[in-house]
Image 1: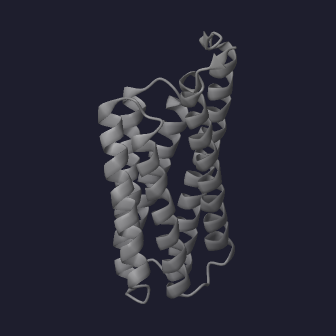
Image 2: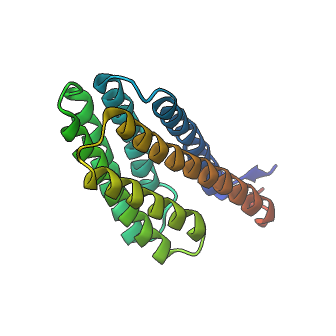
Length: 198
């Protein structure tokens, strides 16, 4: 009688699950971005809720990444910090959605800039998916700097900038998730047969 060791396939299953989660959260980010861009005349309350919920979703994705897919300790620490910041920023925006436009500007702008810097560091420490990380980092920093540098933006312009930022971030998450799932499937197929016991 033979038995297959579950430990052999566990890492690939974990990577596939994390990839699926990235795709799902990326799709939610794309939806949030499309809503903000398609309806730029939304109220401050609606914009704050869209931004806050999306920041929390992205924060959770970063936290899961810190304890899941990433192997480098520096990258894991940065992902964990980014995840916590995203969750805190999202809660701050959601709890006070009626605050001034400036408050939403500051929270979202800082988050974009910090996330861009973190992705730049991640791109420098890995060769896998470096191009997509660099693209995400540059886009995040551009949107963050624009939002922070132009505090007198109208609500409609702010909604479009935030929407475009979330749209790019969502597409990047979907691409990363699909890539991770494919890599996990390819690794699982190329892995030696699991150990068997009589």
